[in-house]
Length: 270
Ligand code: ATP
Image (cartoon, rainbow, N blue to C red; front, side, top):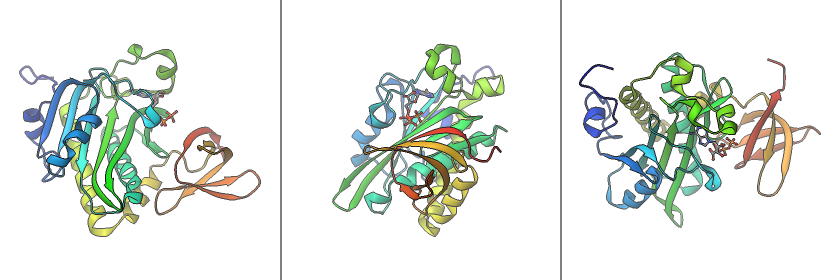
């Protein structure tokens, strides 16, 4: 890091060199907050699309189903407010889109990032990013979507408790050195914007195609747990909405829209 350019994610640092025209025009910065998603949801009604909430640390970071998301200093904890014209049922598309944006950004550092269905980005099987999408909607119209991304950037893995340390990694851990987090955020916001505008102009299929190419789940033997049941099978694909297609051990095809996914082993030994 150059003297005089401390590694802080302040709006001034991020905006200097940010190449977007929508995402990140307004950035709300916190040294510490409970959760950037909570702040973003609170302000969603009064800010323009593309507003970003970013924090150096979160005291109450959350994953899906209220799970705890560790968010120490050194990571990148940010949420983006979007206001797409689409039906609430299509909101999961934005989770997949964000996964593609994060994975592409990590790949630009030469790391083999892949996406675990539906919402984790992995490096060599270890989680480096979680994505939490929350919506505000009225009947069949979306008012806002908050896409939260938590990236273990310059996180020291020793600070994580044992079980999470075993299943996760950080960019610093993979690269052997700190990354410039400001540059990472600039690249990520640009990837997000490019994909989001493409999605609005051309539809979702090309985004889904990029997702498939970077998928860690397709071809895996998986255990799926939904609210109703558990299933085992081979993840053979995703449909145009991002639902996982599972071929169960008795040869049936199942479509899973939402659930927990555990990778068990490679189905074809590759
Ligand atoms: P799983 O990781 O079991 O597939 P999930 O993807 O549904 O679950 P999320 O809700 O996205 O999980 O994230 C919460 C889980 O991620 C926590 O239960 C914990 O195991 C793990 N975790 C928490 N904080 C971090 C972090 N900073 N980096 C990586 N993993 C974390």
